[in-house]
Amino acid sequence: MPRLVLLRHGQSTWNAENRFTGWHDVALTELGREEARRAGRLLGDAGVDVDVVHTSLQQRAISTANLALEEAGRLWVPQLRHWRLNERHYGDLQGRNKAETAARYGDDQVHLWRRSYDVPPPAIAPDDPRHPAHDPRYATIAGDVLPTGECLADVVARMLPYWYDAIAINLLAGRDVLVAAHGNSLRALVKHLCRIPDADIPGMEIPTGVPLVFELDDRLQPVRSEYLGTPEEVAPPVQLEAEPDDPADVKPVPEGRG
Image (cartoon, rainbow, N blue to C red):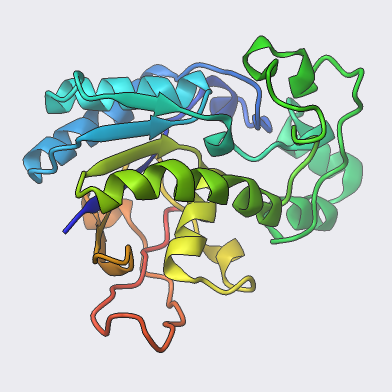
């Protein structure tokens, strides 16, 4: 039975500064690095021997994967990286302080941009230095594919091809897979995997640095899921609506610390 481990990167420098990060490439703080190391210890203690790793192209996710794997004694396993696992692109909000943005646009509008499923933030202009077209790591990607401001629905749409073409292939081969990525790209994956309704997904969070382990059947349907961590780190579960053909013993995905 293959296992899928989802790991949200640890605290980044812009997390600590309360700024919208999105596709901007920032490093982990020392707290974030320790969160990643602890995740690796939790994986090792649980006997989760990761066979292959998928990350975004952003250093906070890559560093989290490397630190966790080193701690777990699995730094040698193959790693694949793809922009489709990047964080949600926050458009013109990217880099702005969240409190200052709320003061400018109003709490309700910013909350709508941040937490709604299908309302994107203001798009970023093509000549803006923050546009991903100006970043060499995206030089080979068609301009009309690069995001300029995404809602969570957009992240689901751009993440799914990579799920089917890469991650699912590894799982179907019986390999235990670690995906080290971001709050929104991982929420997008969980939404697809657990068939979470659009109306419910805005209320679900994944905590930083706490591995979320899924056991999957041969159709890649969740049989059970659990966070590796203490009760203080994981809030009560979100109640999910099961599909008729879902296994009866699927556990709901727990909600993060918010």
